[in-house]
Length: 623
Image (cartoon, rainbow, N blue to C red; front, top):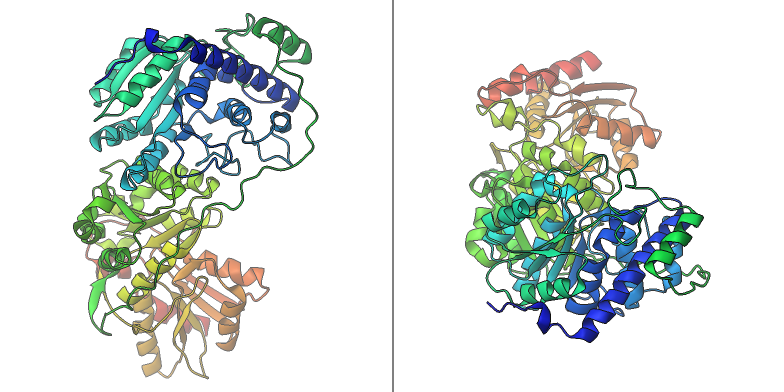
């Protein structure tokens, strides 16, 4: 390993970066004062670090700031957004005048960065996620042999987040030596001093224990910053942590290391005094109001159609298993498809894909938060990521999914083992809230296939569709009911049983579709005909089309789902119908209402009110 000393850094580089750091600090204070809100002191502590990355270390084309040929910069401490915007402006991505539109309704320069800003790959603001995103970007860069490096700036406050250490372990385990982390250790959080304050050795030992190359520097000593960046670039075989001792509010006497300045801006008079101490910034002309919002945002790359499903009607396969085969099949025609699993690949069956394409599969271990955010990083470089775990465990990564949506990420998520139908494992393993969670995510598609054919077709659609896609798969084996030629539109549903004399509509999905089909047979034998709908797409729903089916069946609807009643399939259907003004005259909603426990799947489906018998009773009561 080559170690670069401070003496190896050229004096002209030091002088340039010092001046850039001063300007970035000035611009950050000016922009936040103009906005009347923001975090100038958090920007001042990291100004030299960001200046060193942008104007010394990073390969970056300001004319094409999101190019995959560029090195990448991830701002994990998103409240320092004005500092990032200042660096992008100083580099030439947009004019300096644009900085003065910070936080305005008409500006792309929001309070925390999003990919609306050129050069930004993922949204920040929920702390602790940036290193995971950086790992995803780095994996994709290595896959493409691009030589791209990824720099990520974290604050010491967010180093208390568990996800940071999930990501640190993951990044080291996969030898992502193209990741350089800069830790801004300014010892001040939002409401109090940070846990370790300026005990730099603790941070060094923590990173070294995870297998990182770690250096401790003075983060305001520009020669030291540049030497550390040079050493990081020369380090092979492990990621690098530059742990920088800094002062919050550095360079301004009445801000430096002072409590109660987090998230507070300077008055005009205070700004004048601060600029006198820091050194004046150039005169900034009025902004002409031209938007520099990034267009277009990334969409999944295209790929040829795979061969149609090869499942015979009546054959039995769990949808979770069909998911694994679908990934493998799709990967043959889509070289960008990649997958991660949270140590459940033998239960979600993504191991089928992993065994066939080991270079495109990553074991994320039991670290779901990191797994989801790594997927965001992969998607930002144009990969097509699928991440999977038991659906119940996605609740601990919900914030990461929420941030993925704000990142406009094209991320595909599979949650298996849903509902009481998983059986003996008991309630800790039963996802009964997952559809509600994902329905609340802006722009997400929520998909719930009943058989292997539907699963395969939906996986294909997910790989093509922008945004967040959630696939809910079941544990029990189910019979194939659809032919290989069947298509599954998003939005869409399938009418699987119907007649001209239907007296009610029964809506199910996944495991409850089969209970609905059993109920159909029992009712038909008793002279009652019902329409059975497979609502495989729980979001979005074509409310007008669904309303027409309900109206044709007498305006009576029974929804049945292996989920709690709040936020699931039934509420989704009712909301869609109300929105279209086609509310049924009678509605019965069968869902899991009690706290479940272990048992055989059939026992639990019966005991918690979603079996064929309960459907039959609900239809008869409605008629």
